[in-house]
Amino acid sequence: MIKVIIAEDDPQIAEIQRRFIERIEGFELIGIAHRLADAEDLIDIMQPDLLLLDIQFPSGTGFDLLRKIRAGSNAIDVIMITAAKEVDTLREALHGGVFDYILKPLVFERLQETLHNYQQHLQKLGMLETLAQSDVDRVLPRSSSTPESPADNMRLPKGIDAITLDNILNVFTQRDALNAEEVGDIIGASRTTARRYLEYLVSCSKLSAEVSYGTVGRPERRYQKCR
Image (cartoon, rainbow, N blue to C red):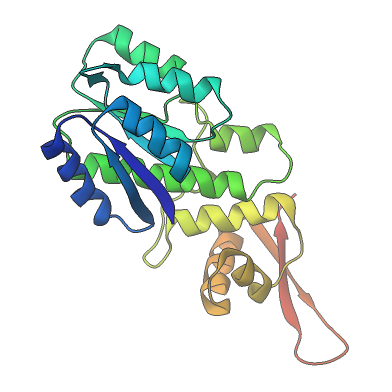
């Protein structure tokens, strides 16, 4: 579960955010702060993964808190949710390393999209051990000429999910010659599900498959990235 704190001075808006988060799987709200000082205390004590941060507070701005977070050793990620529409405000938020910038009034679908993107971002980082440039490009999609993931350029048939497909492709950036059961264990899926995705990737020439004959039992198909 991704632990979330809301820092929003308006209790009604904070309540809307709370209800939205509760509808999105994989996220746990662990605190709400209506003042900057309270938000700072919650972050220090609760150590959340993600902060939903407003900009305007009676005692200062969300940027004051953001600067304190970045100056310290706290690894929390930040999503700004604000009514501020000035370009300079967005620029300051980007300089502060926010993951996303969402304008009020908050729409559930927009927050859901951002949180799903954040989940995928953490998944991609978690599967990496060392970096190639292609790995960096997938985690930090900055160029419109570079697809966010290999699955983006595929027309996916029914039963094939882009996120799962990306996860399986990422497995083969660090490992080679795996069977369906091994891939399923790595991504947390059944052997049958993994086999369906693997065979699809073979049909797209993203992976190749060879039959391996062991000393005992049936021959098995082992998959590797196409050279």
